[in-house]
Image 1 (cartoon, rainbow, N blue to C red):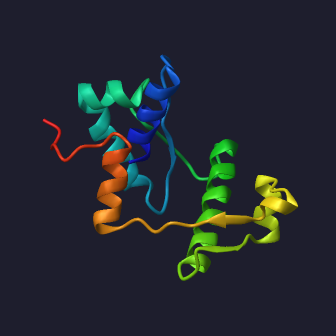
Image 2 (tube, rainbow, N blue to C red; image 1 turned 30 degrees about the vertical axis):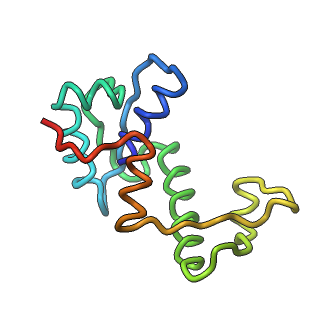
Length: 133
């Protein structure tokens, strides 16, 4: 889903370059690598996602940029998990500092997309019901 979103961003931004997909091993690494390898094998999907090469899986701790992304994902998921029952809530101070919110902008809208809402969101953002061939 994220690779597809990157393709839509590239289209909207008129970005013509390639993108390298790098995954940390562990937890979901093998599953993500397999999914992205499937995307890479499909010419149409590879072109859309701007894949420069097959996805690279690196050992946990070997790529500092991935650790920063992992930290951000952990914070976002924690924020989401604590926010499911509310539409707006105060961000954790460490998360707020990490993304550098201003005092006036300390609350974040949270939307839960599932079922019909998720399908509508995906279609509105360039996806379709068609099964890739």
